[in-house]
Figure 1 (cartoon, rainbow, N blue to C red):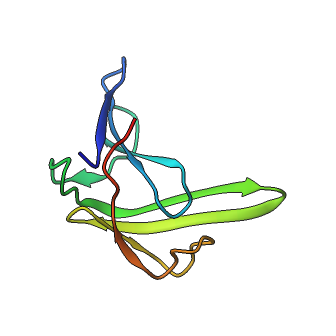
Figure 2 (figure 1 turned 90 degrees about the vertical axis):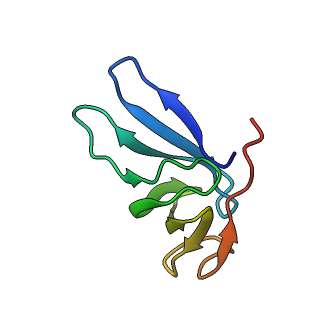
Length: 97
């Protein structure tokens, strides 16, 4: 399984995946009230979501970005990523948690 489902008390549904680029868990919300959501094909082993996934944070005083498309179980990292996989497409790793 590449995506792990989370159900929240307010009816929100989200999917978690391990990002091999920035080494963090990322979350996409795929259902629920009062929150923007991504479309999701429903397949945890070959997930596709839309639109793109954009995660940004600050680390050691520097802005960091992970920006990607997820299609058929693969992550297409965009060129604005600040990690080593920028511009590459890789398989989403199997869930290990």
